[in-house]
Length: 268
Length: 250
Image 1 (tube, one colour):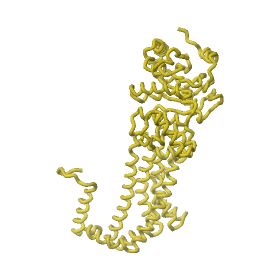
Image 2 (cartoon, helix red, strand yellow; image 1 turned 60 degrees about the vertical axis):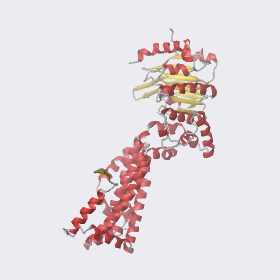
Image 3 (cartoon, helix red, strand yellow; image 1 turned 30 degrees about the horizontal axis):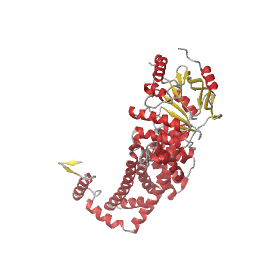
Image 4 (cartoon, chains in turn purple, cyan; image 1 turned 45 degrees about the vertical axis):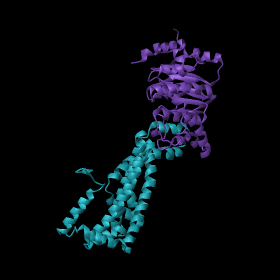
């Protein structure tokens, strides 16, 4: 199997003519002498879900945090909607691996926190928060506190918070890795619906091959030492199919196998 | 605690100690320990007098002001030290030094700087309380979950908003612990201040009773002081328990 190089992959995208919501250009990040990211370029088409997949240490979370403006790249730049960014902004919203909820605040305040920081009036922001709490299936838990919720429910709160600020780009850092397997599957199905219904761009970090293939329009496979984009895969055949049948689709299974074949040598 | 299957109410050990005190007092071993019953009788007699009420209000004022400054200066300084590496490096040696320094020895210096009045007493009280508040707040901020800070940053929190919407609340369990210990130290500070700087308030009463060998009066005031400090500390301990549920899940 031929592995397309980065440039070819970029070319391919240009040909398809999709507008990019986020572009990473020659991004490098060094921690002292350690190169976490080296000269990485990647494009994230608007309205689609792009997964960053790779073994630990490949810099996928680092890249996500640089896109989010939480980390500064050593060199290179990030463009969001055509404008270079170097700090967090209202065009991007983050979903954290460990949920990052305020334990002293109830669900509605947690969900409305992004709006609270923007100075939206209390009644207005709570109305918006209520809508998204219902959307993620937590209606009736508005006054509950995070420690009263299960892990899956907490991440729904984190998701509702990210949705309520109505950012163009959702950055998700292994959002389902801290919840149990059943909840995780439900989340993945919900995420598919979310990508279809909301006109947002999702950037999704994961270390699960099946998860990446299941939810992504585009999968960027990152490899470590030196960290680089080794391959970009765009599953197309089953994207429009029913959520239940995807896991039995031959193309789905082939892609999972193919990715595993290219990653297995990096697993210690 | 249960003894012989009977559940004892909280602080029942105090009854035992009170009994022991009464026996030792009744045996008349030393003038220093009058019987507890005598102390209680003196207490009820003393408590309504104008000299006692004046002492109480003077002490309470100095104490409240001292604690107030220790809290409103100590907590922000502690948060700043936990947040900012440079501030931490600059201030930490001083905080540690003052925490363990014999502050009583500094009181004469304060008298030279700030005079013999209430101001020096308040500053002494603050100096006794503030260091542990700073250190505890700093410790609380240092263990805040990184992703909570990143969350605030990514949703656009300005430094001031992050300060009082995230750092303060996330460190609240430790802050309350620090304030509780600080308040206990402030009780020491206010009495030492009143004894050494100007003989006012409870300090004056202690001085008066001790030098006239009015031991039951002396103990009566001490009991009042202990009860006050104990109640304040218990109120804070209660508040600490109220926020303890999230200390484990930050």
